[in-house]
Length: 284
View 1: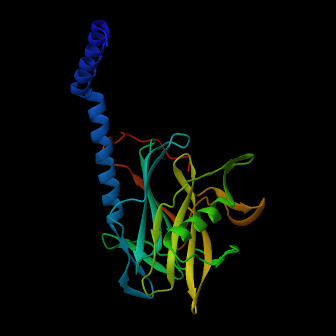
View 2 (view 1 turned 90 degrees about the vertical axis):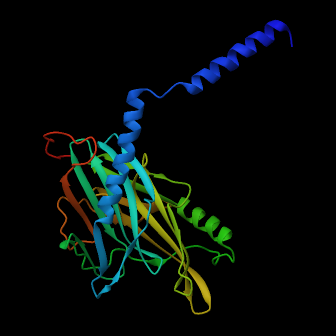
View 3 (view 1 turned 180 degrees about the horizontal axis):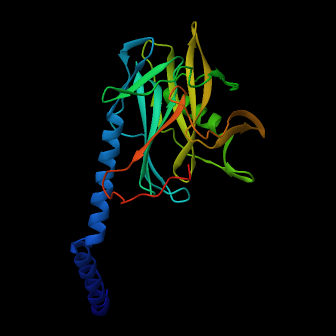
């Protein structure tokens, strides 16, 4: 190395070292703090719900400590959002997206994954009471039986999810193909129970989960077989196709009822970065 080269290298290293010591800009610090505060706000919003089986309210669902996914959606004005799941005996039974729209509204978007009725309350007040099963599990068209190992089963489940295309339709002639996240957002099993292995996959508009797919290796006597089910996470019309054939669909919902398996609790957002005088929300 020549003296000149050594001097240039020394200057570069000194510049990098000084840059590393530069404090973050005030706006960057504020954005980071506000983002962390919004996360805590959304986590507390999810924790505010008590969900149980309607047939036995002593069987309360357990919320996962952390959200499965964090997202935004600039097209529809979602500033920040999180996807949560509630479990019973380690199996997902209900899910919800808690998200904030730039209009100043906060959504708690519920979807039942249960085989029966549920009841959900917030501060003792009933909020969501789906009276019907949330999803329909079907025998999955997977040629090979579930593999003997968890790694092998994950490969099978990911391959199965890629065989489907999910779409969402905002309005006539405005259909969008959703993006499948390559890894499941949640993996689960029931030791000694009916589900030996399961995974939830998300089909997203950007990072916004609009359709969920559950794939499960379930016990049938002494053998395992594959089941699957789709679930909506949007009020818009959506469907799933395999070989260009629609295998599942959900219609546009203009106003859900608390007794529906899919339901939105909408309220004014009062968390970090609260907007003043929010406009009416016309873009659900």
